[in-house]
Length: 219
Image 1 (tube, rainbow, N blue to C red):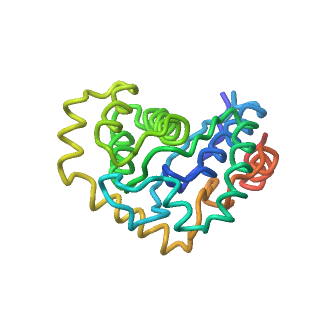
Image 2 (cartoon, one colour; image 1 turned 90 degrees about the vertical axis):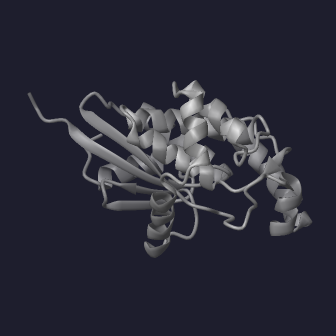
């Protein structure tokens, strides 16, 4: 039997980054357009903080933070475009609600990756976190939101509560964030394919497919 090819996709992302959500959908579209029967697809997510100074208690109104960061005029222009882009990818962007630090949500994703079948669990969890923040106006710095998300992928809520209250994986997540910065990554999403090809931003499915080919995968 022929050996399966490996398609390893390393994604640096933040859970409050709209283009990361769009990029995930477009990557999935690209993967659905190729024959993966002969390919082992491996997807891992790595943390990034777009706004490292956010409070850890979600006390900021999301729209206020956008205006603070980008200015009112740019926000007025940006949000309708984002909503339109989202619709094309089956995402119902909604910009109400609060925003806080994403650090603990990244710790939860790191935790998921360490478990049995961790890659799938991490991927399922990131879908739930994106949906919670962008479509259900939930605050990812709220431990209750994170516990509910973890429960949906089969984790024990009490274990997750204890984990989030501890310092476990803080050091590892901080190291991963620093590594990405040292690697020169200043914006997300950032994709690295088979450790050869790098892509920045939410590419179209065709661009992903081209990148798979350049990385030596027969698609």
